Image (cartoon, rainbow, N blue to C red; front, side, top):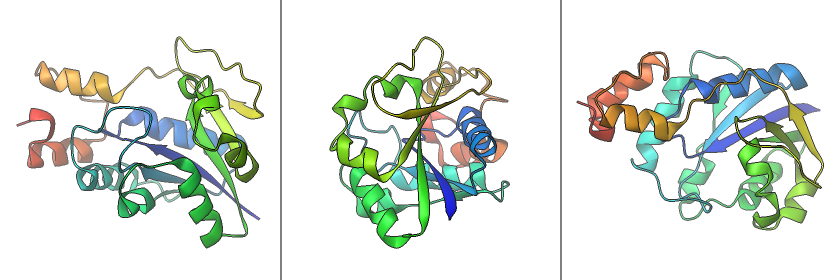
Length: 189
């Protein structure tokens, strides 16, 4: 049976931390692929700074050099709030012979009890957490923990760097940066 990791998020913008998480979890759990799924409208936080289509394109650019990385626009095509339960049910219906591994950061582990239909979601996927600085990964839910190199990069940090007209070199893929400049995203011109 194929084993697929799901890495969802706003990706506003996607950065090297996302790519490192995907690759490290893929290797640690011997997953066949990692599917990056940009949210349309995240239910747990404020909306994105740029359009869903621009975020989708940036994720495509960020992942295109890794043959084990795929991008699925299921949540963007569905539009509205991006509840994970809806996405996982649709993915399982389309891929009945796949085991899905839902990758989350340690900051989301403590938030799991508040996820929409979390009990049902727990039956449909294996949750995988990766550590983030400043967060514990303690939970009563069955979550697989994967140790990855501690990379403290966030999309908000990158947006702030750009706002202050400071370099984001080595924090995001060059192709993503070129797209951001071309589209004047985040006031980047």
